[in-house]
Amino acid sequence: MSVTQLEPTALWQHFAALNAVPRPSKKEQRIIAFMKSFGENLGLETIVDKTGNVIIKKPASPGMEHKQTVILQSHLDMVHQKNAETIFDFDSQGIEMQVDGDWVKAKGTTLGADNGIGVAAIMAVLSSPDITHPALEAFFTIDEETGMTGAKEMDAHLLSGTVLLNLDTEDDDELSVGCAGGIDTNTFYTYKEVATNPTDTCFKICIKGLLGGHSGMDIDKGRGNANKWMARILWELQQVQQIHLHDFDGGSLRNAIPREASATVSCANPALFEQTLETIIADFKNEFKSIEPHFVIQAESNDRPSQMMDTTEFDKILRTLCAVHNGVYRMSPEIEGLVEASSSLARVIIKDGKFTTQSLQRSSVESTKKEVSMALRCAFENMGATVEQSGDYPGWQPNMSSPILQTMTKLYRELFHEEPKVKACHAGLECGLLGEKLPGVDMISFGPNIRAAHSPDEKVQISSVQKFWQYYLASLQQIPNR
Image (cartoon, rainbow, N blue to C red; front, side, top):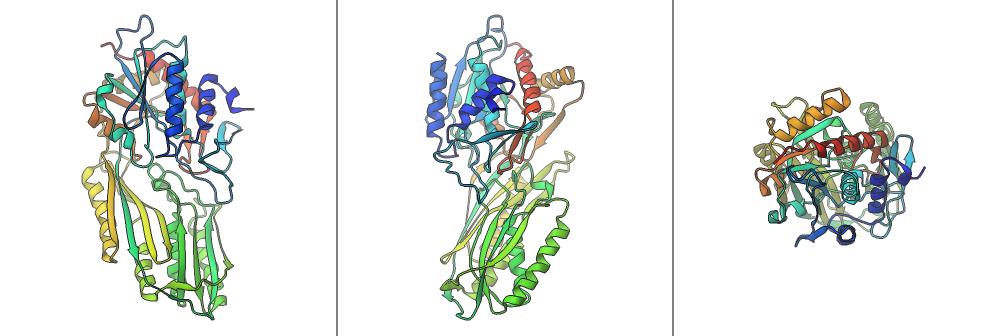
């Protein structure tokens, strides 16, 4: 079955149209033009602000004029990531989708359900001649995934709504009322290279098949981080014989848990190298047998590069990579099960005398965000690296007495005969920034079941989209009066 034949048809058709347009973060020109044409072709007021955010306004349906104006908000960009063996050009190709039972997936790439399903749901209401609704301000932001630039630089004067529905969460039984803030830590270091030992044997070590996932939503699941795994492998190899590093390339995106990494090394005793690596692999299999069942670690003979990292520099860099914190930093003492603060070592590149890293620290509490980012800064500065921290954005403080929360909780109970899970999440929703820009606006976030966002295993559940659609349309009818 084609994705466009799924129900609700209007939503899936808009999702397919979105996925035909390349829309990586910071390269949204084509999707901005697409959305501008979409709004104008409907005859609706359509605005592209100076940042590139698109706003489409639709008047209230007859009889709904007394309701509060609703801001429907989702982001246009998507994470572009693929498996190493997948041949795909994100700059020119649309996402190739397939139906697999109750799920929609992509072929070896991210799917773009984050946040394309939310965008498509808004488009379906804007284009519908018969769905009744209050006055709507559809607010489509750019660059959510790599800095939240759209939300940071939005023009708040262009919006007048007093209720905001953010359609960017990933569990259909949850209502999100809070989220983490974040900050990027990027490090730079220049190291000395020397001539490679002419008698050494060279190997390329590759890690593949880790689950990866969203570095906020999935950080507490104990999944392997390919960069940290590779650092551990190099450390343990170094304990039995001197190894020399030629290059290291791990991870891909700042907000995705690294699934793959490779490193080129050389040593004097290849038999001991292979024996030690087998032991390390066995340890990983034992430790992660219930979490990472499909990972592959392998080493193949490689041509010997002419240069290698100086031994003293290698020791310094390796110790830092092994020591730097990765994963949950602190659980919330206030909300059971919520990760308060975390850090993800997302990207490591060592090549041609340059060592760089990218990591993302998150926290729902500003002070612990500062603490975990301080820990990263100190670890890298101790080895002499230059550290740049940027992209700081605030969290969204929960308001448990929110009127829209009370309305949406009651509606969920009536529709599905169970209590929704009212939660704060560890992802970086735009609501923290939107709350600063739109003080007094009552906000909530919800969405369908999306799994493995930010990875090539990303998928969205068809039956859950149907449930989400029913809830979403019903929520528009329950918006409080002015």
